[in-house]
Amino acid sequence: MDIRKVKKLIELLEESGIAEIEIHEGEESVRISRDGSIPLPQTTANVPPVDEGSPLKKQSSANENLSNDDYSDEGEIITAPMVGIFYSSPSPDQPPFTNKGQNIKTGDVLCIIEAMKIMNQIEADIDGKLVRILVENGDPVEYGQPLFVISPS
Image 1 (cartoon, helix red, strand yellow):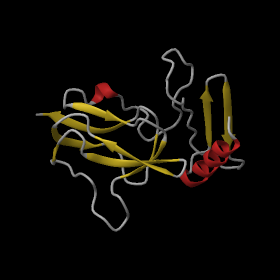
Image 2 (image 1 turned 90 degrees about the vertical axis):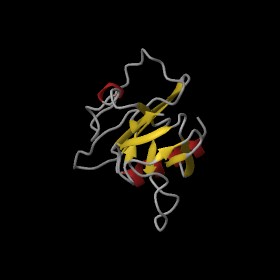
Image 3 (image 1 turned 90 degrees about the horizontal axis):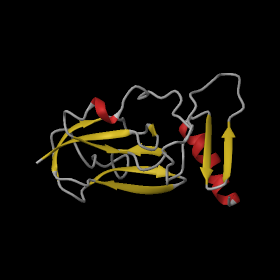
């Protein structure tokens, strides 16, 4: 694993408030943890592609009990394609990309997820009405975590 990637992971860890992160990339893996006396929530994540049989699990998250099935009766679930920090707008002084109740079209930007200092725009893959926003601006998100519920049109 490239040392630059490890340094960026350390920066992400410091900025997010996460206590520990473990990344597996093929045969290589790295675990980075904070040294402190106060136990903080821990997150373990796979780098895609995800092995469905992997023993890695999510540990301590505000959305720990949420799954795609919890909202499936309300519409389609848009999940986080990566680990990072969720941002609802392009910058702090600009309005959010989307609001609850807004009509969404395929390709509309829903949010930004910052991962290793890279801002990744997350786009809608269906047309519909935004029913729920499941995370708050600035929250750390995990791979596969539900972010939005969209009722298809």
